[in-house]
Length: 238
Image (cartoon, rainbow, N blue to C red; front, side, top):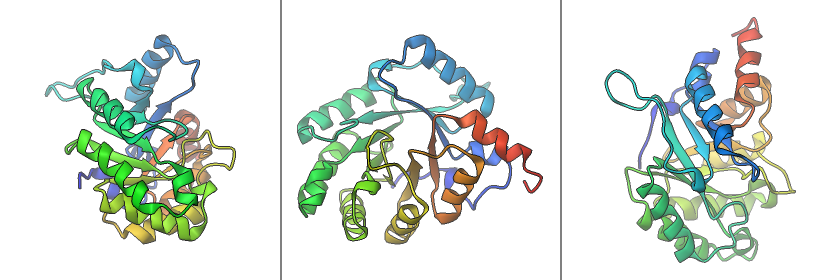
C-alpha cells in the first residue's frame, strides 16, 4: 500500500490540517481558469493535493527548488455514478496516470453493493488497481450515506482485498448525503490502519474537519478549504 504523511495524529493547527487536504474542484461547469486558481490557492494554503476532473489533465503545478511538485495531483474515475463498465473505469484510470495523476479516486457501483454483490465490487476495484498500479494511490469511493453499516464494512473489505490504498466516503454528488462521523469511524475500524480513510462531501467547517480526523479520517476532500483552515486558525484552542 502507498502511504503518505497524512497518517499522523489529528493536527491542532491550520498548517498541519492543510497537509490532510485534497483541495477539490469537480463541478461540471469548472473552467481551466478555475482550475488554475485552484492550484494557486492550493499552493498558498499548503494542501497535500488538488483533485480535478480528468479532462483537466495534464495539470501544471509549481515545483520547489529541489524539482519536486509543491502539491500532488488527484483525479476521479467512474465519477460520479460508478455505473461504468470496469474496463471503462480501468481505461480512464490508465489515461489519468499517463496524463500525470498521482492519485485516482474511483467510484464503485453502489447498486452492486446494495444487492450484496461484493465480489463484483472487488473485481471492479481490482480492474482499476491493475490499470493504475503503485505508486499511484487508489482511493475507493463507496457512497457511505447510501449504504448500511454492514454494507460499508463489506465494501471496505472488498476494496482492501482488491489492493486499494484508501476508502473514501462520498462523491459529494449523491442525494443521500456525504461524510458522517459514524461512517468514518466505522470505515477506520474496518480497515484498521492498513488503508487510509478519506472523508469527503459536506465537510465545510473547521469543526467538521476536526471531527472527521478524530473519527479516523487520514485525508479530507474539501472544496471550501480556505474557510475551513481559517476557522481552525481563528479558534483559540488551535
